[in-house]
Length: 191
Image 1 (tube, rainbow, N blue to C red):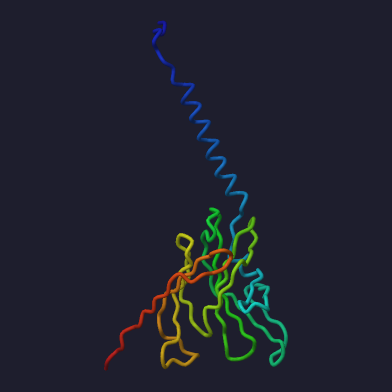
Image 2: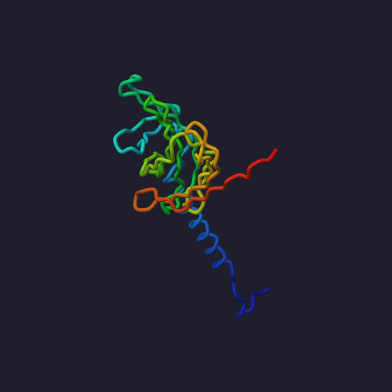
C-alpha cells in the first residue's frame, strides 16, 4: 500500500529532539565535571585565616600546631563543615568551623567561607564567632550560612556557654556579613 500524499512523517523532528536533549544533558554533565566537589578531606587539609588578620594555619588531617607555649604558640583544629553554593556560581562551596588558641585559656571559634576553585579550597573570608562558644550544627541554605550554637549569657563564665542561638551569615563582596541572630533562652526549670 502506498502512503497518502497528506501523510506527515514525525521521525525527523522526534529524532532531532532526542539529539538536542542529549546534547543539553551532556553540557550540564560537562559543567559539573569542570568543578570537582570539595570533600571533608580537602577541607581538613587546607589553609585558613585565623580571623585576626595576621596569622594563617594550614591544617593537616584537621590539626595545626606551631611554636612553643609561652612563645609564638598556635594550635588549631577543624570542627565541622557544611556544603552549598555561597557565591551563586552553581558550584558547591563550603563553610568551615574551626577553633584556634595561642596557648592561653581562649579557644576562638571561627567561621571560614571556602570557595571551590576547580576542586581546590580557597578561604575567601573568615569571621570570629566567639571565644569558647559551642557550635552544635552548621548548614548552608540558599547561600546563607546558618549556625546553631550555644553562646554565653549573663552570669555565664567563659568556660560555660548556655544560651542557644542561631546566627546567619552571607558572603557579600568577599566578606562574611551577619544577616541575622536569634537567641533562644531556654525556660528556667523549677524544683
